[in-house]
Image: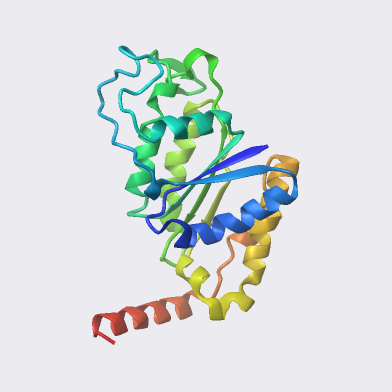
Length: 238
């Protein structure tokens, strides 16, 4: 199994998104998977121009020559594509959304019905890799990910996958970078490794592991109090 990660964090390898991804990939590699990460912030990828030249003038290929050519080749070779992003305004980051929009050359322009949705099929019978979704945010509850979850579920239905996309959401994600807290939340990183191993061995993440991955890291009231105290201190210049 080949797993390609698209890390859409502006912090790249220094972000909290990476702190979620790396243990998962360690577990996946322990089960025999090949893994690779593309840090979108380091790539030159322009916005989709909406010209539809990839459907007409140059079928299957965008007229822009940038790093998206390389990214599409790697996506095509992957069995699983892990979209990894911090939550920005209830969705993915702008740079990751730009990557998603530039996948249009992979689709055929004709409209077909798949289940109960209308969509564009893959070009020339092209298969789409399986999707995984990882995200974290600074808020303390899981409800903030509802919009992002719905977006990816719509994408799954459009590509013919009518089951739920495996998604790991981490509320209070800023706690992942707190080294003094690490001994107390090691169970979370262990669960991420277990999830990676399960995904490769069984094609999914067990309900038991998902339950652990979505437990609160600390009491919500404590987190909110400490977070607000931090920003009070910052805003006062301390």
